[in-house]
View 1 (spheres, rainbow, N blue to C red):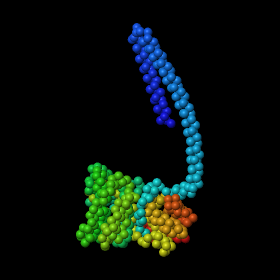
View 2 (cartoon, rainbow, N blue to C red):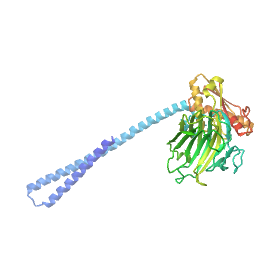
View 3 (tube, rainbow, N blue to C red):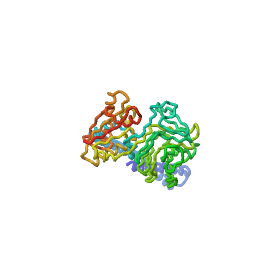
View 4 (spheres, helix red, strand yellow):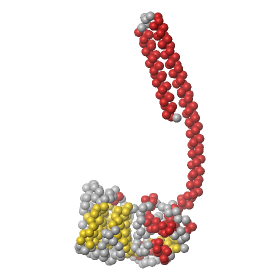
Length: 445
């Protein structure tokens, strides 16, 4: 309708302009040839009269078109108003239906952070039995952490009130784990500061797996290098040696320059020879035969940092042994306990890196449609016993909320319970013991 109105208006204007030009030409000719013969004058008079009539006709058509346009505008207003009313009614109806369908979902989304949904492809599942956990809670600021060894230096600092281990270049850092099992996971938080366009292309945080926990050369090793350079995408180097012979060395092209400028969570899963590494929710490395046999130690080695400029901070290191698949444990043993569902301190807000574990629970429930679960929250012994009891139940409820809202598990299949600090599985006087006691248990019903 708009297109035809524009054409009609355009044609009307053209006719009007042409008739005006014709009238001007006629008047000019009459003034120029005022003394021509009468027959020619009569002809010109007729021509002038015809031009005037044409102009009047054009003006009349313009008025009609204006009237038509106003009429069309009124009709459009009426029609659009009806459409708006219809749309409004439809929207209200849809909103009502959606509200009825999702009333429970809205209630169950209270403890789901926006970051949680970002981890939808995150399939990392941490180990069940914690071998080492260090949040530096027992160490003083400015000291070297007591559960680590180094051939260089380093110290604890505070960032936003939390303790972080600041690593120095040209130093190797070894957490105190005397042996590593065949299947295990490693996690730590990382903050990178000071890197810019002048940071070396060789600036990296190297992650080493070696056959001894000292600082000498090693015959068997595997490593992955996390690049820190900003002016170019350096990629992730993967390398190994078996009996002192290099078998694998390659560069995985992943541009993480922007990603490392923010808080990062590093997750590593070792299953026999297979090595996988995630940076936040992104799987970066997955090499099926990277890790040699007889690996005993996990190490960090910062490389090519500018003194006082490029800085690496780590915290919340957790090394845990991986056990039997959780679905198998649920079916065989009737229960599954995990320390991999993490919460903000003193809160029931689930951290996004917990996605992989909860996803596996949901998959087990989908594969066993008749199975129900009792979700039981446990805490360590820090704080008030009554508050811990309430917090453990709230955390169990948060897990149920996500299973219902994010994975569409029928809520009737899920029960919750909180046991607080009443059933510890480890010593609450150590960091590892506390970490093992902060768990969520799933019991088959």
